[in-house]
Picture (cartoon, helix red, strand yellow):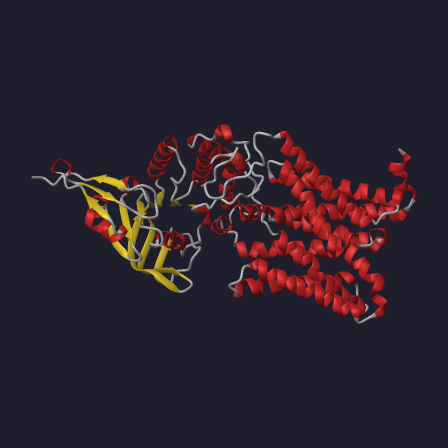
Length: 288
Length: 266
């Protein structure tokens, strides 16, 4: 039993890491639910990678990484909005190109300074074990903001997930609430990169929420399941990292994605009559 | 009170006019059927009416205001394009959404909201499905749930785009009865439909073919000549004993429809 609890009691850094991880798990669960429901995974991915040059530039200038990440996210959202509204190309293409450009820009900035080498790994894969008290407080505030705003806008967010036109007709302008949703995704990514890194934050955003989507019958239970999956993944990942000396952030994400696939497998096995419950796009009929 | 008033109205999208010169008035408790092929301007009219598309020129008043300004008084059912979405949402959640426009962001749902939701599900006979995930329902069951959502609005203006798509005969019957009751209650109804048999029952029928072909009562408007202008292919039955029967063949939608009109008085 001690092996499961003691690491967090004996080591303040482990406790801070667990706190930070759970806070990130909560923010990711709430906003990840809407990302999954609205099929915005690719935008979430792009945002997660798009913050890299911002963080790199901030470190180069001696500013806090989170500030740089925030600027990077705003640039990314503005870029995506501009390209999708002005271009005939599908938004996938536009976002994909922006995402590559931001990633490349990040590496170019990093390559200008020798001092970056260690930092780059921390940016990409997180340094959850190095989370300070101050950072935990910032994360707590950000998590409260994300959860409060998402709850306040839960009606328009649900309408938006169901059918954006219904949101418009019901008096909730879909564009405004879409922007708010993007902003919350960005805020989540910005605070989460510290714990799981920009490459892995995407996993925390999607895997717990997607697990919720497999099991839940309505959005609130989907969020609750996502919070549990995210928190359990954080705990197990940290524990494994402590006992077996493996990379903490990567292990956390690996556990979360592992849980998703395990649930996917189990739900499919337990419903043999409904191979995967998918609906035929052309007819809307269920296929047995 | 007038529900809809269009004067010298041009509708379209991206600045391009699809239907010019629309003049019509729909009174409280009045009904209007929009009939035409795909691309004729039915959906454009409906999307302008609910405020999703701007008025290109002329004027349109909806419930005494500019389109889109009375969300709590309007119910809109669009042509849903089923996309194998994974939205974990129960049938009852879909119907509850009908109350959001009235409740706003923070308004607490009261007993009367819950009563309306229960009543609407009862009317469309989907009470038994209330806790079932939407994604597990058949196309016809889903359409009934969407129609229950429309009823739960308790709207002054109901706007439907192809509402009978996917409905079985029993569902269609319930839908027709429910809309008759809504009209009785004083709500106005606008429906885009391919079902000429349904359109005949409306107070007014607007035939569209990227222009207004005709506007008037079903008996005046749903004639072989005007339907010919609207759809392109109309076959009259040449047999003497079938005088007054003609068939509208529409390329894009299902089987041809045969319409019986009263033989002219001899």
